Each structure stands twice: as structure tokens, then as C-alpha cells.
Length: 303
Image 1 (cartoon, rainbow, N blue to C red):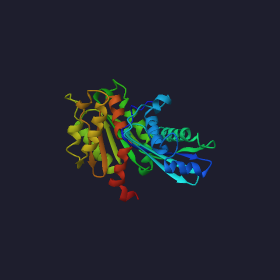
Image 2 (cartoon, rainbow, N blue to C red):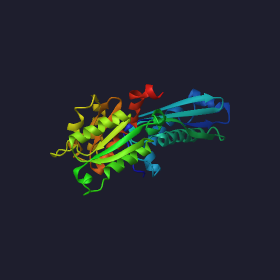
Image 3 (tube, rainbow, N blue to C red):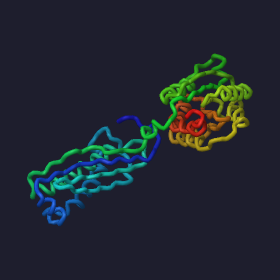
Image 4 (spheres, rainbow, N blue to C red):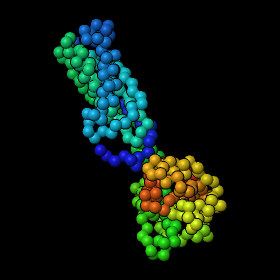
């Protein structure tokens, strides 16, 4: 199965359809009058669909087991055609479009099975996804495409050449995937004055985003939060909470990181962990959703 461990949990909805076409008006009348020998067609087919949607990962090997938190089945009769509308909702890391199509197909098949004794000309048509909602694709077009950024690595050992930077490069890779233009990438020692100077300089240059990596731990030289907090105009606790919550679900020491998020003027400043995994997971936790902030911070200026 595809690895979805890096995805965020969101509300996912999918609506699928199947069309059952009967061959004579008497079949429709029997359904409406509840005179089909095998029982109530709509009620029993709905039950079959509910059972089917929950068994989707048992039938399709690449589908992830996921919590089905809502289903509904609607029927629309138009002449000799009955349209089945099957809706599925979940709050999870991956979508439910296959589950919705599977549910719709099982409903249609059960209708076929119940109606075949009285109608030999039944056909099933147009099993398809009508629409889905949730996940990154829903919000992709809402983000600005002209965001500029600087990435600052805070590390005594890396700046001295004793260690290679990987966290900063992981951040840059994620930014590029999100169409953010990285204008500068620098490595500096863990010095408060230098950290502050960089943030102020980038803000004056008009950069949208400054991301620091490193110096958010608990050692004596971890001073990135102490440097940034006094100069920030406003903190954004929700970003900080999202980073730590995402990390804590993946490893028990994430709670020890002192990530920071806030604004300096209309520049967004982030301080992320210095470990490669910590930086990468922090970026996965908040990107691309955090880019929505620039429609608020600088939207009027750029529109």
C-alpha cells in the first residue's frame, strides 16, 4: 500500500453513483409497491451497500483500512432507470472515493439479484465518482504562487564545517514542492544577535517567509526561541501546536522541541527542530496549509 504516514488527518467526503436500468415499467411498480418476492429492494440493497463499503479493503488489496464514519444511500427513479447515490465520510489521512464507488456498485448488484426473478433485462451502468472533498488537492489553488523565503540553519557545528546540513536542505525541498521560491540559504552559529539580525534583514527585504532550523532544543546553546520571541510582533500558537502534535504522533521526544511561529511585520517567521526528521516532519505538518497565511498577511499588497 502507498505510504500515508506523512499525511494529515482531514475530513474526507466522496459521492459515487451507479445506475440500474430495468426493462419494463412493471419492475418499477413492484419496487414502489414493495411486491418484489425477495423483499424490500431499497432497504435490503442499502444494507448490502453498508456492509460492502466496510469490506472495501478486504476486496481491493491496495486500499487502506480506514474508519467509515458516515454513509448514506439515496435512490432517484427516472423512467426505467434508478440512480443510486452513495455518500461516504471519514476523518482520516486518505480519501474514500473507492469506498463510495464500491458501496454504490454493491447496492446496484444487490438490486440486480433481487429483481432478476421478475425482470431478465436488468443492466447496471455508469458506476463513477461524482465528487470528492478533503485533502491537499482541495486547497491547492487557494495558495499564492509568488511566496519568497529564506532558510537559516542555526548550528555551531555545521557553521564550523564539522557536520553537513541535511535539515535545511529537507526544508528547501519541501518549499520547492510547494512552489515557494527560496532566495537565500545560510548557515550561522547559535548566536542570538546573528539570529535576530537575519530575521530583521529578511523582513526589510520583503521576504514572505523565514524558516530557521536548529537551536530549538534544551541545551545551553539552543537559543533560537530566545532570540526570536522578543522581536516577533505576534505569535501563532496554532502552527506551533500543529508541529508538536504531528511530531508527537511519530516519536515520543517531539514534545521537547520548542518550535516557534510568529510574524515580524508581514513576514512569517518559523523556528523548527534541527534534526533532519524533525525538520522534515514539521514541514509536512504545516505545509502547504500554512501558505494560506500569505493571502492574509500580504494579500492586499499583491492582489
